[in-house]
Image: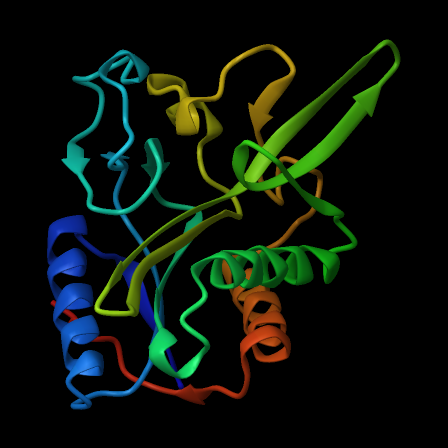
Length: 223
């Protein structure tokens, strides 16, 4: 199973095309499984369940329709996106277990920063409980949105390392609103984490959950 990291900012449309081509090649046996880590320029994506009213600032950033599950989400600098292209034909063909393993992966990475990630019924993604004198809320630190085609997965997770959290205000993230819910990141939690730190934590946790990795090249060549 390969692990590839693209430097800089990768355009969304080109990344999706490369990801879909790689997923098709995996299905045909012409390529191996791959986890592809990258960052995108600021943009919003709409999953298959996205509601138009949840796009609060339609002219703020480019908006892309996505075939992944879920609703609206934000991608941008400081957020580690990981596109996960795995062949579930060799992994039990169990979608529920696969999503649970993605959650375990993120939670394991957070544990390496001494952050307790939690999952909640009815709220996709991984959350962090935050409390202060007279207040408490839960903030999302990572989103999950996947798609399967002929039992090969693509799309994946978005892990907030140090994005501009104000950019999330242009959408209702994943359709979840209310003062008791918000968005956070490692740096927002007071952790001076770099993208390299996050990548190391994600790599170590992924090996524990899914198995060994080897260095690979991104499916989209550098410009």
